[in-house]
Length: 279
Image (cartoon, rainbow, N blue to C red; front, side, top):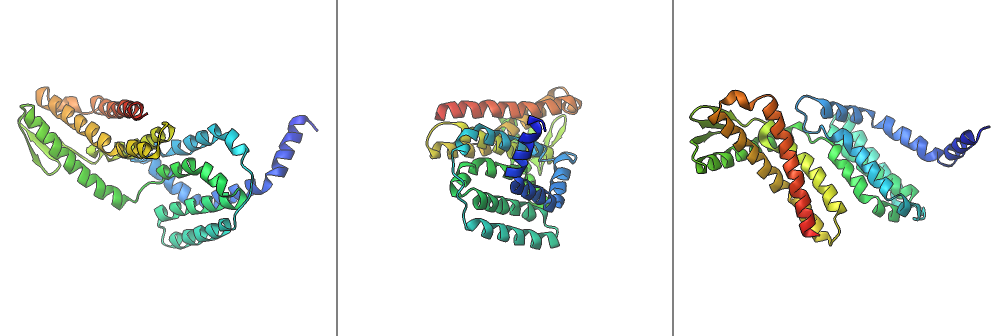
């Protein structure tokens, strides 16, 4: 038997329980994982970043590998209780096909598994990488629609005010900005919700990495909301100005997509500057 085969046999012999549980866990949550996959890759998805979230969590765990290796495996009786609670919660929600609640039960089960096998010290050490997985769970569509509707009205209102301050005639009617030469429709894609969801994930990473007291980290994370709103309003104003001066045909297609990337790039720079300022 080769040395590689011996190492593999030793590894699977030592961790066979964890491997078996991982496979059973993925199999049990198969319908939820398929639902998430569909939401990630659907047209105009608000969660196109979802596929990256598990890899980011894995990288954060890899960074802490030396610290985690020093933590003794103590276990906790609360682990089994949380596993059973999560399993019951999943079973009830599966009957009614409530996928978001079913996905949330994954947290309860994961917390229980870590407590059962490794103990509370290990759970505290992996708490942020574990909680970061929440950003891959899509919100229910009814919540998305309600929030998006309010955000696009707000973006249209602020953009209309700024356009008038710039000397450009603009009147808001719902989510439509009426100008002299064109009407700008602030639709769901331009509401800012998509960038807000992505920026909250990015903001949590920045808050996790900066050095300083907890209140600074919380403050940096909370700035994701105004940063997402400000950058999105800037995009609406920019596209409205182009539409008024050169025509609405220049605000669709490539330019529309490029401004979406620029919004995220601008937000990234603002996060970086705030993080350095708070440090």
